[in-house]
Amino acid sequence: MGFSEEHKQILQDHYRNPRNKAPLTPGEENAVLDNPSCGDRVALRLGWDEEDRLSELLFDGEGCSVSMASASILTELVKGLSRREICETTAKVQSIFKGEEAPEGLEPLGDIAALRELLAFPVRLKCAALAWDTLEAVLKKEKP
Ligand code: ZN
Image (cartoon, rainbow, N blue to C red; front, side):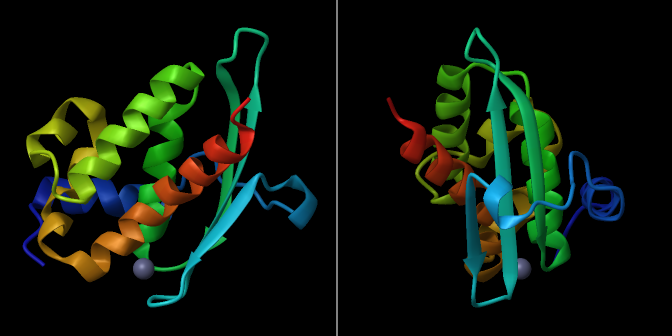
């Protein structure tokens, strides 16, 4: 797929050693979405502290390496951020995934830059976007 060696290693590492992954039962999930075209499923559980920072973030699910690596990367990227920062980060990532913003915008965001090569593959991009779609679904649901 034309991934650089460095990006390949980052994705494999997240796939093999997912961060913040734990089994979630239906009552514990804040949102769960799936990507039927690939068979991916991502569930998220969010917990906020008194200052409205994301103090708890767990994901569960199954699917291809891209969807699982992307979910793991997401948790590392947004955990500890404020709700406003998370909304901004999510909007930025989604607009890059949709091709509305230049892919260079992923570079300062850490490991998620490893998904850059996927931007040329719309079908696989759905796998990468799934965790972010799930996070958006939670944020929309929780909107005060
Ligand atoms: Zn997939």
